[in-house]
Length: 312
Ligand SMILES: Nc1ncnc2c1ncn2[C@@H]1O[C@H](COP(=O)(O)OP(=O)(O)O)[C@@H](O)[C@H]1O
Ligand SMILES: [Mg+2]
Image (cartoon, rainbow, N blue to C red):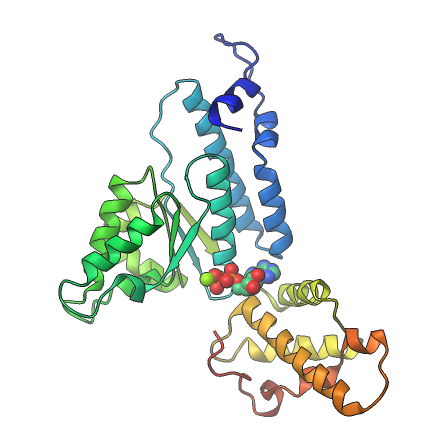
C-alpha cells in the first residue's frame, strides 16, 4: 500500500475532526508482521523491541501527518546500536530496514554491512573515493557501519579514518532523505567515539542499547536454536551446557548468542562422531539427542579456554 492509499484507508472524512484509525493503519502497514518475526527470531531484548516498536509508531504517524499536509521535519532516522558482539544488532538492523522500506522511508530493502576497512584506504587520497563508493552503493537503503568507533583513532595522528567520518557526516546530513546510517559497536567505545565526534552524535535520532544476556536467557536461546534444527539436550546435557555457559562467559571473545550457536555446532559435530564410533544401530531419538559428553568434551572444561580462539 502506498502512502496515498494508506491515507485514504485511515481517513473517513476530511474535515477538522477527521477520524483517523491509527490502529487500522498500523495493521495495514504490516509492520506488526515484522515486529512479530523479530520477536520470534530474538529471545529477550524487551527494551530493544519496545524501542523498535516506538520508532515504527513514530514513522507511521509521520507518514500519515505528511499525507494530510501537516508539516514537521522528517524524524532523524540515523541510529546507533550499542552492545557486545552476538547480541542481535545486525538482525535488528535487517528488520529495521524492512520497516523503513514498508513505510516508504527507503527505496531499497537492503542493508549494506561495512567496517572500517571498507571505508578507509591505506594511503593518501584513497579514503575519500573508497567511502564515497560505499555510500553510493548504499544509497536508497541502510548502511550499517559495524564497530564504527574504529574510524576514530586519536592515538594515530593523521589517521585516514577522520576523512571517512567527515564524508559520512556530510552525507548523513545532506542525503538523509535517501540513506539511513546505523553505527554499531561496543557501548563504551561508541560512547567515547560520540564524545569526541559530537557532530556525529547530533545526527543520530535513535540510540538503542543491547544489554548482555543472562545465562538463563542464553539457555533459552540455545533451546530455540536446537529446536529449530530438530535437536534437543538430554537432561544431563542441559545441565552441562548451563555450566559451559557460566564458564565460557568469563573467557575472552565471548559473543553471546553467536557463541551459543557456535557451541551447538561443535556439540553436533561431537554427537555425530560419537554416534559413528559407537557402531550401534541408531534410533531417531539417538539422532536428536545431544548428550552431556558432547558438551563436556569442550576445551572450556578440559583446559579452561574457548574451543576456538578466533571465535568472536
Ligand atoms: N536474542 C537472540 N535470540 C536468538 N538468537 C540470537 C539472539 N541474538 C542473536 N542471535 C543470533 O546470534 C547470531 C549473531 O547475531 P547478530 O545479529 O549477528 O549479532 P551482532 O550483530 O550483535 O553481533 C545470529 O545467528 C542471531 O540469529
Ligand atoms: Mg553484527
